[in-house]
Amino acid sequence: MKKIIILVSIVMSYSFGYIDIQPQVIGEKKGLDGEMSITASYSDGNSEERSIGTSIKGQYDAKDWLAFVIAAYNYGEANNHKSSEAGLLHFRYIHTILDVKNYDWEIFMQSEFNPFQKLKDRSLLGVGLRKRFTNYFDKFYMGLGLMYTYREPDVITEYDKVLRRTKINSYISLKKTFSENLSIAYLGYYQPTVDNLSDFSSNQILQFITPLAESVNLSLNLIYKYNETPYSNIEKDDFNAKLSLTYEF
Image 1 (cartoon, rainbow, N blue to C red):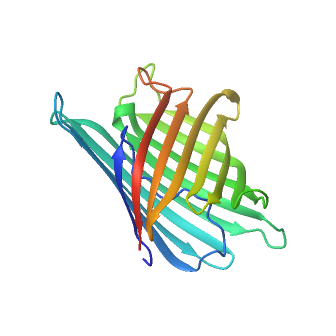
Image 2: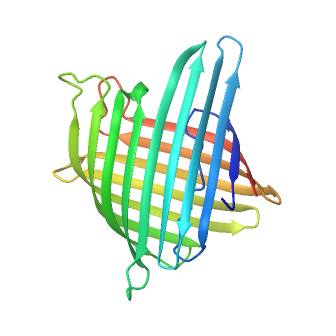
């Protein structure tokens, strides 16, 4: 890999280590690239808590297409007992639509697990189009497509069942630089079920990034997730925030 990014984070609420979420532009780079992020937290006192998370991204850029893979895992303990664990694997391929300016087609696959949300497996396969807008933002994309999802609980019961759904996949991805001291990146998904639009999930990630020195950035990451139909006794929404120190080389 030509570039590795290591994030050492102060975690306010545990989550994966987060890689750069800014939009990927076909033709902006060439060849193999990569990122790696690590988050860690530890507290001691009335309770002892520690956690670690990592995300790794490998990407290949060509003239008319790009592809990337993201793998992420987290693990946490409280008072010597496991308190969190989750993993994710995501693949995406994006290709320009020849002779149609600012439009790309894409295909993506993802698999994840999170036993603390009663999620043994959530897998999805999707296709879609994205359009690039050239206006106020440095980079701005809107995407729309369809995806098939499979969700299986850790224990199948009358209330927690295997769910197979076809969903609309829509998203906004952007980056804006305000000054040499501040830029933001945002990635937001909205995914309703085709035959029941009131059944939807949403994922919002907002990054505030400021450089501290050459190749060193400080970023605040705000992550909000919502699922209208979680498994029993699991909250519908989840919010966490973390401060990350980023070193690029």
